[in-house]
Length: 289
Ligand code: GLU
Image 1 (tube, rainbow, N blue to C red):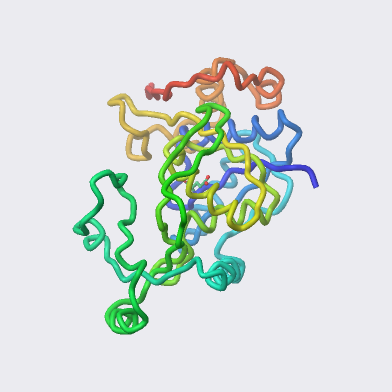
Image 2 (image 1 turned 45 degrees about the horizontal axis):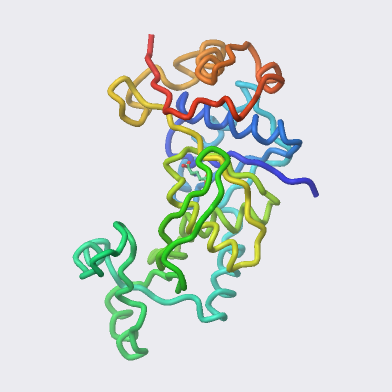
């Protein structure tokens, strides 16, 4: 089986021009390297927005993006994630955590502990302590990691080393955590190229570390710059004139291709000219007209 790239939107809102641009880039990276292209609807968190997911798929198709298999809905296969958590648990690599977000913020941490890393509060609890705490709060499950950092290689960022803590595998409400689901699904569908917004660069060491633990092949990463609004903040739907419905396909496509440095009318033409080495490395500031 040849490798694959993918776009994996969360169906929380309609795609805006920045999301569409990332999707175009993911498609270009995949197609220009002879890969298949897949779509995954990341609806574990938000299963109520099937209508949004379908509009996202329609918008992707409208700008010319093609995919090679039926889109996968994460909520359709909870057993896949449960099996991996069970496997890690059998290897002694999972523990229950009873901390709230507030507990984690308030917990004492080592002087050089990285910002946002789980301080390990529940890592060493005895069975008796666990039994007591379980009564008050449904536990999340965390990975017992044996490193504090991990290095990935990114086509745009080069070598990137980032934090790996005992991150959550399954939330207290039973929902598989984002980092687990991404790694399991990418491996399951043969994805070996991950192109996405660079807000997720700092998650990639955790994901790559987990992939290694599970014996999966490491994907190639390319974290692409995000789109910003006129105030230099991350572009959002509320900025207005940002969705395909608001902009129209032609205008949206022209904005995207111009932002990549190759003004063009269609995606096939863009593919002919695609050269990742000349991609803008700075965020793209979107100015509505
Ligand atoms: N679902 C995530 C998002 O919409 C992307 C996950 C990924 O590409 O790994 O931000």
